[in-house]
Length: 313
Image (cartoon, rainbow, N blue to C red; front, top):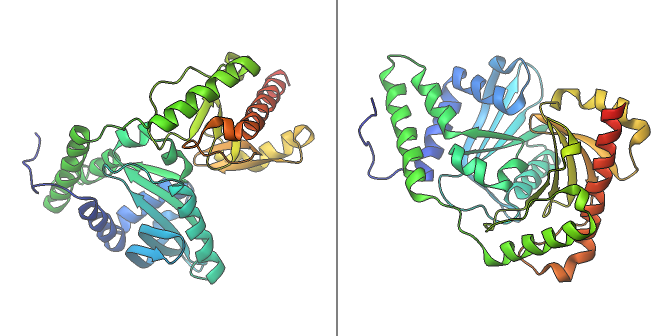
């Protein structure tokens, strides 16, 4: 049975503070959260060193939540969390989170970090920028964690707040198409269709401002593999789904096949063979940066050839 409406409207700040408190006081919730962020055993041993809301860097902007934690005698780690209830993504948002994490390492605030976005599942599915965070956690998963607490009245109350936020986002959020980005995507597609038809990039429809990943879908790629040109970030990835734990083994196997501008990295729960290319601005005209776009298409084609070689090996 659906719980009655608790708040007149749930704001991002409401969800921020709910998550912040739970991470700070509940060891079970912290372990559950870190298991999704780190993806490795031992998170049940973690303790929070400090947890803060709305942490602002003078040059790199604001993190919604920053949780610093440690496991045993290990060095402090941080999770920088972006919460999105309904607002559209800001340009280079995931990149700025990463830069703030690196700045914290440089100053000694923490030894390592991960970036995380929490949002309704619908938002995560519709927004390319969400894939640039190290981890994605859906509101629905948080709500279900509270619901699984059984007869705990406090957990039930919190589940109802998160459920209200999900319903509110469902009614109120639709990615708004951006004319400039839509035009960029279509001209990119036309160029790729003529010069690199093997990439089989689908003809795009209307695109919102946060649409910064262009996916190639060649049949020869095989299951569990994807090629993304990540425009603003400046790289093209051959993504190997679910292989984040195998990065070192993949490096060893592919070493004879990799180019000097290529590396193997973990991307969320996947591993990616990454080629660095010039970044692109999807809000600007393609004609002003067509050479950079072609560099990305060539990199995607090279990765397709590499994927075929892996399949044949």
